[in-house]
Image (tube, rainbow, N blue to C red):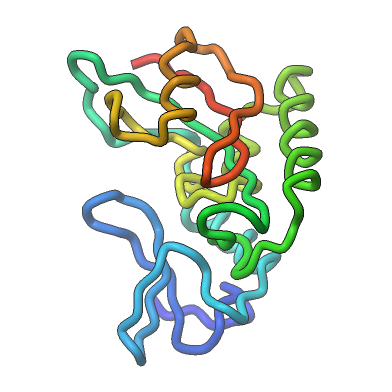
Length: 181
């Protein structure tokens, strides 16, 4: 089903598709055959946010069937900044916020979660700069060596149901929740 800019916020020729290998949404240009994880230049982030929340979101349901061995399952909420490894996301084609501004945003998310106003999964679905947002931030199962060192150190230190404080990686600032298997 082709959707136009008024609904998706994507520039002409771009559409949202789902990766067969990862089960995550990505952006595909039907003219140039270019595909990318981050939204293309010219995207209306507010329209895309509403579209993705409506059509590409689930409440932290993972299709992974068990992790086995030393694997754990976690979800996260990512706030990128201009110094992030890839300063763009499904929400914004070009992220220009400073690291300090990103820190303020993620600390407010952390406050809301810890106050019981919302869950990490609910916030991640609309506010995370990671494409895992469509799964409520659920990254599925992973083992040591699969993620950035700072991220996995924090995730493996958590008990199931526990949420980390702010964790900084080359990708940006994260809140991580260790999920039950």
